[in-house]
Amino acid sequence: MESNAVLLESKSSPINLLNEMHQLRLLGHLCDVTVSVEYQGVRAEFVAHKAVLAATSKFFKEVFLNEKGMDGPRTNVFLNEVQVADFASFLEFVYTAKVEVEEDRVQRMLEIAEKLKCLDLSETCFQLKKQMLESVLLELQNFSESQNSEEESSTQPSILLESNAAAVAEADQADCPLDPPDSPADRPGNRVSPEMPATKPKEKM
Image (cartoon, rainbow, N blue to C red):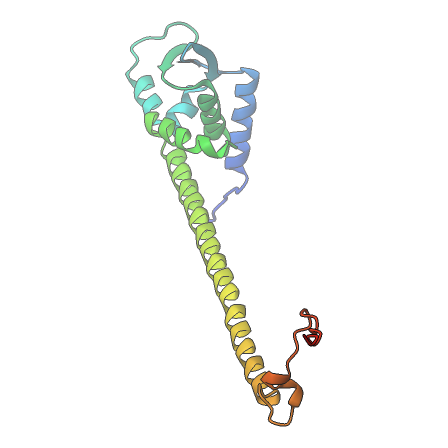
């Protein structure tokens, strides 16, 4: 009697495999390729594993599959026009599936991913650039909305002040008439300027 097949699958195995390969590279163990990188006079060498580079980069896969002979215990690959820091970040990404870079280096990482034909890194950079662009657009939208609300709040009080001033003027005119008939002190003939002194009567000649 045949038994049913069951699936044995480890969720942690891919991560453990990457971590172990990363530690082997850092220690220089079992590395079979040396990548020399030079950019504007700055040069550095990185040791790595052919299998990892070939599995993550079509550029390295083509190089390794087309090589005719070994130059010794390790294959040497020379890359120009690639900055040392960018290739170090590339290696960290292909060995760990993650890397932390400055925002202004995302475009350069996308360029090196396209140059080395690393699809995973290219997609990751593209998605990150998309998120950064959406974040900038959202900030601009919020700033524009806040500016509009400030303009509206600054115009409303002036309208209210004008209406209040008009109401006060109307109330003053209603309660305090300008020329009341029973006020002899306000008649034109009886007005005396407070600043002008009273004139003395002329002496008789």
